[in-house]
Image 1 (tube, each protein chain N blue to C red):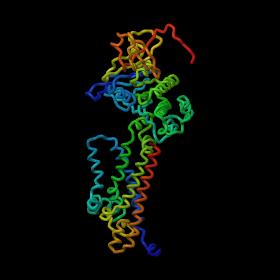
Image 2: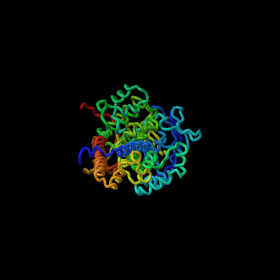
Image 3: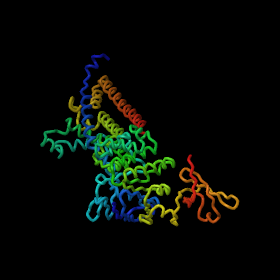
Image 4: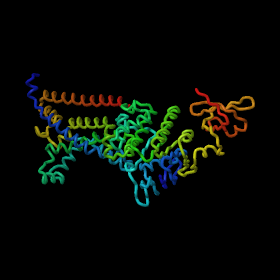
Length: 230
Length: 289
């Protein structure tokens, strides 16, 4: 293994993965926070139904999810056709398609930590804020968000890491177009298929270190904040 | 003047019952609501604060309609000017003492925060976080926070029940001081007889959602309305027979005293009872200590 060999390796799959994870994490936080808030407050009988639907991506084989997404986003489908006609955006084998697919795939990983964080907030704290004249939005920003900071951090980091590591859904919906949809995990598969074990090794070790760092960071931070607030 | 005339169906542990509360409360007065657990006391406070809604009736505070089923008015808690102190303190854990109070402040008059902190003797703790404070300190902060918002009514939901007796006494003094200083109409929920006796102008007893007694504390606890100058509420710790009489050990606040009983008294009084000790006080001995 020489320096030149490493320098020759194409790192664009990592750039695509990072970009994808970044965009997906932001979109998912904005989408799931109101849902988590609603779920944490409701005691409706329909709650388990929604929870089950939202958790499906955890248990469903990624290929199943990917297949359905491919079917519903393809130019022959209503949604795919609509985007193609109106915005000239193709939702399959494109970066936009990857973003949509990843949002479905990583949805529960953002939702669940947020929901359990919100559920742990003492109801009286929220009511205290209301009686002090603070609106719902003010209460969310100044009371709830600071309290659930560890949950928010977990949700964001896990979602980011999980999107980095996805494979099946991305392969189904995005294919393996270099510099467009060829994310890190797919690139590893591709390298192995081409018997380029050296490149596969480099890609894999980077993902391994990245995953470990992410988890270590979460646990380290959470143990620190637990000490600070308990 | 606070005019309350409300009803609400409640689901208690032994079936449904209806909370019916009709009363006018003078401004600047101190009312205690007492009664068994699950009798609707906390719900009553929540209805006043707007955290729950009555089924029907009317709540009017200083001519401002908080709730009216007839006029279809139900002001949100934010729009009612009410200070609520919860049993579990409910301080914001990510804010310091000062920040908790600042959060409640409705104008930019920061000197008022310092004034209140001074009054409840918390100035030294202003930069501490709630998790570093004792229960008593936390409840004082909660009280101070409610005051800072300058409420028309102060609602105290068993604020002292989680504290030990020494701390409780100290906070009772604190509550009296605050009430005298700011003259805020206060409604307290309490189980502690000495507490309600000490603090309130009037005591309202609720049983199964209905007011069963509503009177001055003296009339409520001194059955024969005796004009005793010395009267204390205490708990019988022990009764021992000494020759032909009985000697009862009684805890009043933090002090233990002994009172002589005769056989007839034992029909009514037994160990563990709450009792009222009164004396006609012809010549109390007073001595500097």
